[in-house]
Length: 411
Image (cartoon, rainbow, N blue to C red):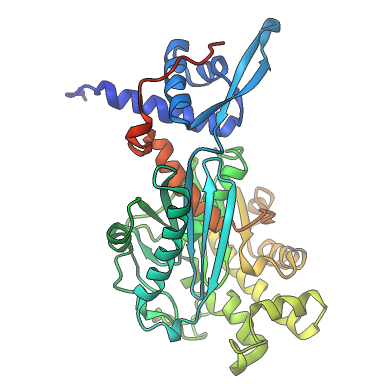
């Protein structure tokens, strides 16, 4: 097919900027010459774009590097000091707001727990989140904080910017999240499903080492979801609801779920259900929450350990279904349920899955518990914003910073 329209020079320049930033992020620190060889761009193009980046403050020079033939080059890296993004994680019974630099490093974090049954209006919670974000924006300035990313539980209808269902919290069903933040804040807020955000964080942490593999990150917390990575990209499906494994049936005649189904995975393997299994009708009262269950498991409480094992077995059954449908190379399990006893969880799930799939498929599968430091879903929310900035840096850097560049030292 003949291309009828050419590519505007400004568009080409922005594509080249994005290419350089994303490669520089992966490399951490390198020379302009290496970036040119890595991207296939001309040395002059790389040098000119780096002049812009240095002037804008998005990139910084980091001293001399030893190159080929004994030559020394001035290294460059993403500047961790100039710009910031906000990461937000919304869960069923808590939210977190954090500040991050453009390398994805967390600077601040605040977590607030709430009871959905005591929040008659979703906008009450959103107003609290927006207020926390404004505090950061006021402290650091609009020219410093470029954007925000928000990870939300699902099923999340990405095309409509709303959460279709949060079990036990119907207040979210008809709320257009993007519309709310567009109205309340002066920075763009990008929305993502929480499991996808967790997958983004692990992809960054692995520095795309597994970009050719199919990777599934399972967020097993108050709900259960999966971020599915294929060819280095998150697979989202037609409406953006792919990976909603919490509502996968593992027992057709099992416990009823708020989604209308019976025997959904999250009714057996989520942190909320683990607390109910341990405390019954007392669940949620003082001293009867997930943190208490976690403590008791670590102290060797046999009843709690048995409940935890059954939850892990149920999660393993869900993973069998994922393996049979997707045939991933790598599965990483994280979030709340992975905290109490990661070794026990891995052993139980590995045994359950191994017994439930073909031997050849098992041999080709890498399954592990996440060792990510910090909250990957919160960090992943920030990474969603950083990725958008790196896609089109010229659209996010304040115009006051885009002045005629000085001439930094060339190699």
